Length: 339
Ligand code: DGY
Image 1 (cartoon, rainbow, N blue to C red):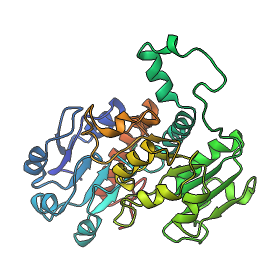
Image 2 (image 1 turned 180 degrees about the vertical axis):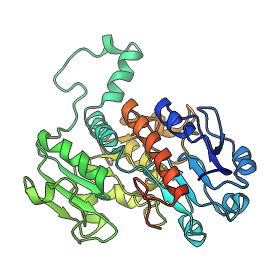
Image 3 (image 1 turned 180 degrees about the horizontal axis):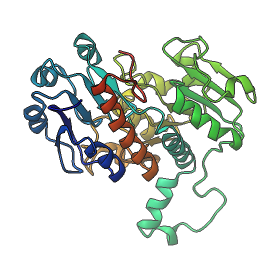
Image 4 (image 1 turned 45 degrees about the horizontal axis):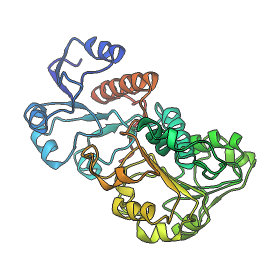
């Protein structure tokens, strides 16, 4: 059925997923056999004649690639929840289906969200840095050493209140947070999906914010969990930081460009906010050791590891293969983006 069907896969896959793909012996599989990102030139030259593509979040899927691939291209499976690397309009125009992996990584990213909140509040990066540099002997225990705000009693503001934000909230409830406000593309409107029944439960107030100003001004913890779109790019900027509380922390587990990095550096340097926990940052991974964000002791930055637990990555790989195969066969994908 899939005879003479060419697919291009832009990474070596984890064992089970690779086996699932290789089992389709009638497919012509062209694969970038490395863990490093695939060269754009390799992708462009190999995409020609492909019916399906399995891609990562750092492979740009744009008009140039789609034109090069040709009109037979039917399906793209992205190994990610975020799809800002894909020109959705270009896919829609060509009737190309897009699969993604939103459910597989919810728990992993929510776990990391909690980790980053606590690290930012409790100055974990700064504290470890001092120990590693051998500075502990110069800072013996005293009552105010490395103190930061507590999570109990916090108002948590979510920019974007989808599945990952709600799973993060589920984990935060046992810490005794007091209240949640959230902002979506429809400010003031209740969120459409109550994924884990938390709103219905009513354990704490969970309310839509009327504006970003309200969210910035009332939150002790701001979590960025929204997609990157033209309207969320630099949503968190100098004005946003100016409204935030001095003891508040901000956490970004979504996409780097939602925060204006220069504004964040300024906010940290001038103590407009208490701290930051970042899984993502503008222009990643090209962050050199002299980047000003790395000079901010109250900023914890990890290299986009939100979904990086072994089980999650294996599941994402399998779902990506399943989405690709379903797309080729015209069947239902595990998760498909509505274009
Ligand atoms: C994704 O899949 O889009 C996430 O950023 C991974 O952490």
